[in-house]
Image 1 (cartoon, rainbow, N blue to C red):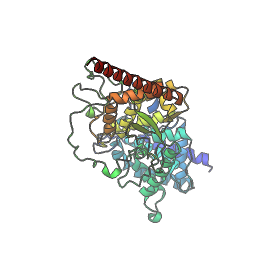
Image 2 (image 1 turned 45 degrees about the vertical axis):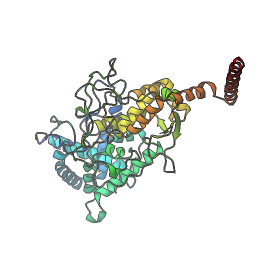
Image 3 (image 1 turned 30 degrees about the vertical axis):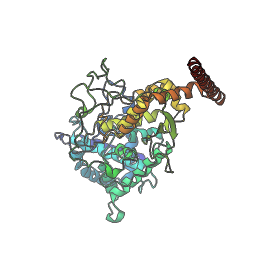
Length: 483
């Protein structure tokens, strides 16, 4: 029997087993660190949260989608036998083993999906799991995983809603390698996925961090990607323990995007729409703390320096490694394309929807960039400094996307566990309030932008002081003559 006939038989058996068992969906498991969640508010632009080509998991499930055949072909290739009868037996075995994961898998999503019956749910886990596995892990059927283009990587890795629990991939690896001497299934899967994600972030110069194999399995692929985005000053072993009681902190002072809430005349935030994660929402209006625009900092005397992302001395470990040195603000170079915004928005959604994660470093960085470079003039300044590199149509497009990175997000700006840039923000405020530094910056920007102007200003200052000195001596001589 040829491959097309075998694929049809496999598909028929999957469909046949799709409607046999009806069981109530379990409640969401509150102990899961990173729930697979509906990412953004329905009132916001949803384009960066929805898959373009490949639909994975229950949020965007569509059995009639064109990629469903491709996914079932991936399952067909992973079945170890060529005989159709033995292949059907293996498929039954795969489905039986996958059924054990259904309750745990349901608990990894923040919705019940009670409309999807248990039999259909396990078929979805198996088919989608085999497809994702084929993209990342070599196997007998595919000695090298499929090297997809960025659109498929984007759908499978970047999108929070389009994820499977990581243990589903480990189970697929276990099913296709039943030999106990073949190695640890978890290690095989996680090492291959880490290699692919590391190549992805280094290609786009988002991060040069090397993430060791996690002792605790990640929740899903976006969670693994997220591990590459952590400030170097906050190593993994300094992170608060998952599930531990949160440390006491001052009342929340939200650092909020300029589109997240309006401000009244007293500088207090008016109540607006609740954030995605209502656990972090302030209970009453509080004073806002905002970053200033890049052009304002520039005028006030702050100097910008582009910082390369890499593993060399002085280089940034990731785009999050913003560092102030005196009056200089060193910002890692951000290479911007449409996928950059998609990736960052989904990691912000991951943090906002995962209270057990107790980490908001990407949110803090995105708030910083959205308020620093929210206008065309700010983007043009940072492009001139080499901090933003983009291939978008215009600086207006970059500014618009950056300004919308954190719509509706609230962050406790004075909790250092959540906002790692608190010290930099306070230091820059001191620079902005220093009148002498503002005067020096005014001279530097308006009068001393070339050597000739600088010499002219110095000559003028010298002439002024000579004239002043002459006037003082003339006055003293006049009073001495009168005596």
